[in-house]
Image 1 (cartoon, one colour):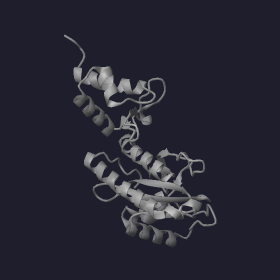
Image 2 (tube, rainbow, N blue to C red; image 1 turned 120 degrees about the vertical axis):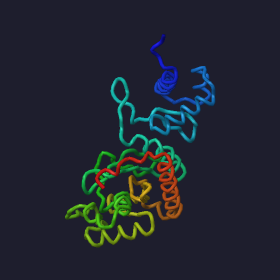
Image 3 (cartoon, helix red, strand yellow; image 1 turned 135 degrees about the horizontal axis):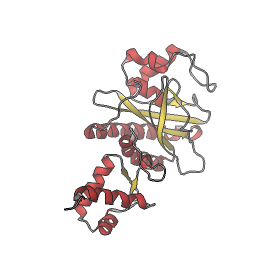
Image 4 (cartoon, rainbow, N blue to C red; image 1 turned 90 degrees about the horizontal axis):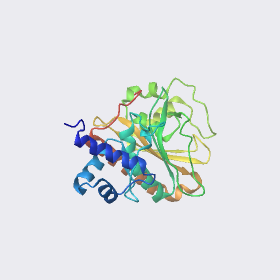
Length: 263
């Protein structure tokens, strides 16, 4: 009698194979290395992607271990947003490459703020890259405004915080009612554009990721260098809103949306 459950061993063999491969593995490589059928290996890979352990690089078709599951010597942690990140990363990488701008994905955090949980920095010489360790104020960022906009209107004032709202740049809107009016406009149009209110030289375009009840659980954002934003404004807005809608649908289908933190 053996103490090994064969099906569990196959999953662990596959995880260990991918974790050990710095460049990730292709389906055919996994099939060959594990001497396993292609169909069952593909289904295991898809399951691990859906659960957030792996992600598939859309450019190379290689499967890689999600960074959220690497830590310390043994490399395993539980991240409450891992499945959300696993779904978002391929989309972010594709959009960043197509439009030459950086992508950020954020969720609600402490009162008045969001936090970035993953980022893809554009592979171009001049780019906008946010410090993802820095709290994201809800009142003056595209991500913050779309997150607030898809919560009940009665909660908007509470969510943006007590104030006062500091002017981070000369363009920052600091009047409470004006901010709430902008949040209302954001809800109507389904996206937010914030030009240099958070950081000079940077423009953010964000759209919400919503659950089955239509409430925001995350925000997808493209951070653009302002002086080249206008020439591709419509392309960016369409790309971000389309991707956010597709991600929302995908996550609802998987029933994998995380709790909406402080909302």
